[in-house]
Image 1: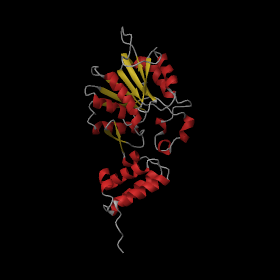
Image 2 (image 1 turned 90 degrees about the vertical axis):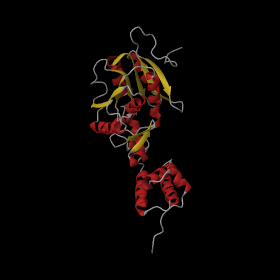
Image 3 (image 1 turned 30 degrees about the vertical axis):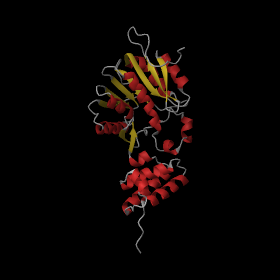
Image 4 (image 1 turned 180 degrees about the vertical axis):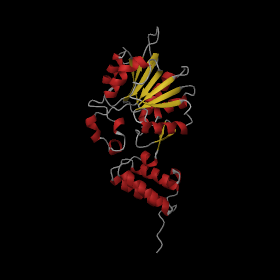
Length: 302
């Protein structure tokens, strides 16, 4: 007896139901994205032609993807890709899955860079390279260095730089935060360091706790270990008039700002689209400079 071919609509519905039962909040969207990946069809096609039959090989591929997503593996890791700042990045086990919220940091850094001459940038804990490469994509005269303690992560970042045509302006090196940078090495530092308190990691969603590398999550007992290391050395590695932009966790703005102010910086908060403080900017005076950032107020301004 011939088996009736599954249709796009059949598969989307069954996949959605399986993911919803597994506790996946975005079950409908994820089922559609995985169906598109398995079949090569566009989302518009899946919605407009649910009766279209699907070849058995694609059906098997889709069901295998649904099994992985039901185990709470993120869609980006199943597909091996993630869009960030409108660019396509490879995502692999050694690197943090880029999040849209991190675009707050990119936007803040670009505002600071606007109108400045060619700039040398360092991205500390670069992971996939998404922050550094997004900045270099927007700033064709800048160059940058991505630093990470993981050589495997740097392999992913180099591959992303190559695929985006940025390898000529982006270099990568194994390092422990700022420790390998010479004095006055860069004018801009960016970083999304680990900021989750160690004891909180087990309570995170499985997509994060299981599939993101622990080294990119674990910020020590209070989540601030990396910020202490970075803040203490900013005055040394930045050129006069330089700046740093750091992503932070929920409720960490006061503690991280205090660390940055101790380093001699003035600090400004940057909220994400939901209004949550997502990024802090630290601004250092150049020779004869009084102010460090001419847009908005810094922490402590009246």
